[in-house]
Image (cartoon, rainbow, N blue to C red):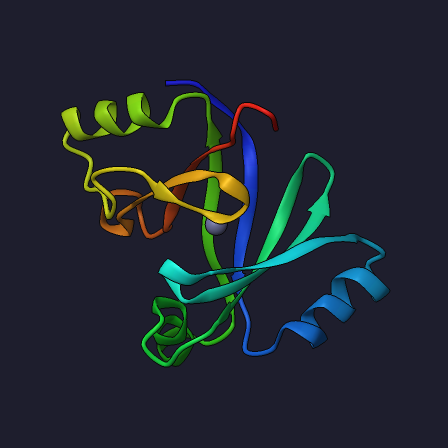
Length: 137
Ligand code: ZN
């Protein structure tokens, strides 16, 4: 498989505005918009950092996986997302290699992307997301 870049770092927060204030007002980075990802019960806010971005994650429901993460671990680093050229091929390759996946088939992510998460048990403690951008990106 071909990994193209670090797409984003996912950061779990309890409130979006104070975090956006830090990154946009104090660190002078640019906000790239917000989106609710209904399936994952999160509102995401992207902050551009060079060719990568930060993905601030705010749970939209008490049973959101990010809400559970905040309960157990508090705010902070949540996942690392790597951009792949072909997510179907990447997932198939990992499955064949016996790597434990959370998503056996890619699902819909923010901004028309397709994503698949790899289980932290297979990645030395890091929740790893593979993301493929739509052709027009
Ligand atoms: Zn992500």
